[in-house]
Amino acid sequence: MDPRNEFESDFGRVIFSPATRRMHDKTQVFPLTMDDNIHSRLTHSMEVMAIGHSLGLRICEEKEFLEKTGLDKEQIHRTIPVILKNSCLVHDIGNPPFGHFGETVIANYFQTLFKDKKHTFDLSPEQKEDFELFDGNAQGFRVLTKLQILNDEAGLNLTYATLGAFLKYPNFGKIDESTISTSKRGVFQSEIDYLQKIGENCGLKKGDSYMRHPLSFLMEAADSICYLVMDIEDGFNKGWYSFEFVKSKLKGIDILKEKLEELSKIDEDGKGITRMVKLRIFLISELVKLAISNYVKNLNKICKGEYDKELINDDESGLADTLSDFCYNNIFLKREIQQLELTGHSVLSGLLDYYIDCIFIRNKHYKRRALGMISSSLIKASLLENNVTKFDDLNDYFKLRIIVDFVSGMTDQFALNHFQKLSGQKII
Image 1: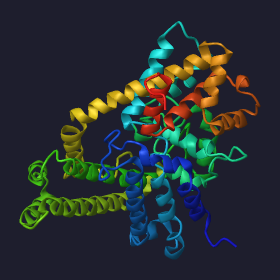
Image 2: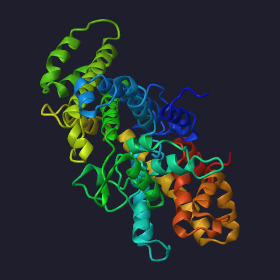
Image 3: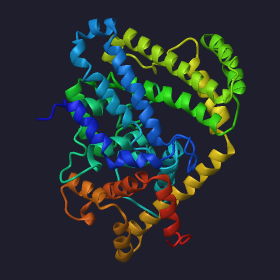
Image 4: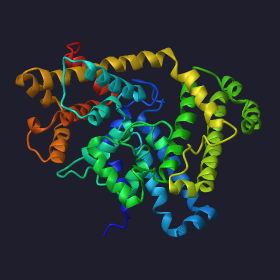
C-alpha cells in the first residue's frame, strides 16, 4: 500500500519526468554557459521549489490563516506545502531553449510567418494567436497535461490542485494587461478542456473567465524571490560587479541599510562571496516574510479573485522593484547575454524554418525525413488527443503544435547542435 497522498504522488511523477531532466540544460539568464556556478533552468526551479515549500510550511503555522480557512493544521502539512513544492518545481517546465528570449523568438517567428501571403494555414484567429503569443507557461501546461505520455492521453496525470497552482495565467483568450491572470496567453486552445476541469474542481470559475488558484500567488512569489536574488548573485560570480557596487545600488532601501553596513565590516579571506551569500540569505528572508504577510492579510480577496498584485510587489519599501531594476540594468543588458540570445534567434528560427518547410511545403520525401527526426512520443500525443492514427489526418493547428512542441522542448545545446547539423555546419 502506497503511504503517499495524491499530492505526494504528483511529486514523484514530476521528479522522474524527462521534461524535468531537460531543464538542466536550459537557460535561466546566461545562454549556453559552461560555468558550473551559474544557474540553469533546473537549479533555479529547485531553489524555487525550496522557497515554495518553505512558504507552504509557514502559512500552515499562521494562526490567522488557519482561522480564516478553518483547515486542520496537522492535515494541511501534507497538502499545501507539497502542492507548492510540485507547482514550483514545474513552473518553468514549458520554457523553450535560450530563456525568455526564446519565447519572443517563437512568437515573432509566427507573427511574421502568418503575415506572409505565400504560406497559408487553415487556422482560426484564436489558433493563430496561440503561436503568435507563444508563452512558456501555456507550453508548460501542455507538457504537464498531455505531452508526457505512456499509452494514454492523461499526461503526467497530476491532481487538479497541482495543475491549478501551476497556472499563473488561466487565460486562453485575448491578452488584457489590466489584470495579472489575463496578462498572458497561459493556456492554448488545445488545453481549454483541462482548464475547464480544473476550474470546476477547484472553484476557479468567475463569470466568463477563470481566477487564479490561491496557491499560485505563493508559487509566483517563490519564483520572483529566487530569480531576483539569485540573478544578482550569478552576476557577482561572473565578476561583473563587486559587493560594494551592489551595496551602492541597494542602500536606498531602509530595511537594508543596517544589514549592508554590517556586511561591509566583514574582513576575511573570500569576504566578497561571504558578503554576497549573507546578503542573499537576508534578502530571501525579508521577501518571504513580506509574501506571507501579504498572503494572509489579503486571503479573502485572493480566494474571491479580487486581489491583483504580486505578493512581493505589494510593498511600500520598493525592495522587489529595486532588485528588478538592478537585474535589468546590470545583467540583462550585458553584451554577452544579448549576443548569445541572438544566437538563439538564429537557431530557433532556423529550426522552425526547416520543419515547417519540410512538412508543409516540400514533397512527401522531405516530410517523411522531417517527421523521422521529431520525437515519436510528441506525435503520438497529438494523434491521441485528436483520436486519429496518422499524421496526415491532423489539421494544420496540430501539425504546427507538434513542431513547436518539439523545438520548445529542446535543451539549449541540443537545439544548437541540431540546427548546425540540419544546416550543414556540422556533420557529427
